[in-house]
Image 1: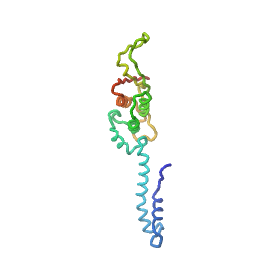
Image 2: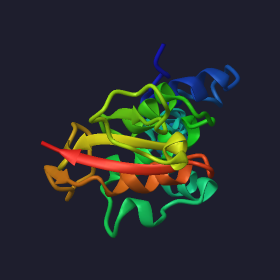
Image 3: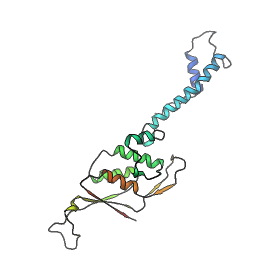
Image 4: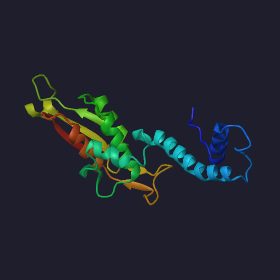
Length: 197
C-alpha cells in the first residue's frame, strides 16, 4: 500500500477539526485564524512528501538522495566504478556489495556479476593427472586453484528509465566486473578473465 500523500488543504481541514467549537473559532476562508493555519499547512505537506520519499529512498535498490550515505557505509565509490560512474552503476554496485554475503560457488559469483549487470559463465580447471587423453592441455598443480570468468568483450549497460539527468544512453566495458570479482575471489585462487564476442 503506498504512503498517503496529503496536501495543504487536507492539513488545513485536519487542523480546523482539532479547534474547539464556538464563535471565537471561525472556519470560513476569510477568517484570520484560517489564513494563519493555511500559512502553516504547506510546510506540513512538504514534510509529509519528504517522509514518503524517505520510505522509497531508504532501500538501496531504489535510492537516489541517500546514495552517498549508502556508498559511505560500504566504502564506495572505489576505483572499481571508474572515473565517472552513472547513478545506475553506483546503485548496482551498492546492491551488489550488500547482497554479496560471501561464497565460493559458481552460482554465487554468477549472482554477484548479475547484480552488477554482467552476464557471465565460469570455467573451472583441474591439474593434469594420469589417465587423461593425449592432446589435452598439460597443467601443473596450480590449475587446481584456477578458475576463469567468461564474459563478452564489451558488456553494454543501457540507460534505464528513472536514471539521472545527464547520464549516457549506454556504457561499454567490464572494468567494474573485473575489479569486483577480484575483490570477492578467495585469496588462494587464481582468477582469469576471458573476453569474447
